[in-house]
Length: 163
Image (cartoon, rainbow, N blue to C red; front, side):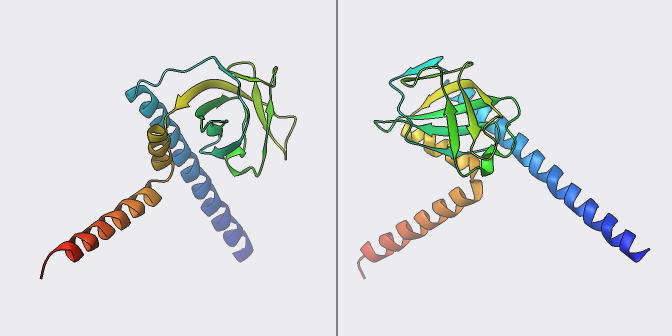
């Protein structure tokens, strides 16, 4: 009887954690979409001369791809993209190695190369927009950075004051 109670408690705890993570991811996805709309970032259907340099995950539906010349793109994915946020490496499945195309190219993980997450939308980002997107993804980290910056600025202002 005690074992059954312990198992039920663990199951309920794990379910609560999973549903909380799902709610957080949905909120982040909505925040990314709201940001793109508020900034009037126009999607592009194709990126010419795309040379993959790196990536960073945001959620299972959004990630950032880096290309040459410091070009960054917010990528919206569709399909079953389970755990792409936690993947160590990704595979770009492209029709043409020189371009990146929305609605025809896809992304897979090394762990599940047969599961293709279709690239639904490609948004080109400026460096400022990239910083804003990262702040949406990590609000606590951004808050800590702002507080640290304010402390440094206050300290330098105090040092600059004559005695």
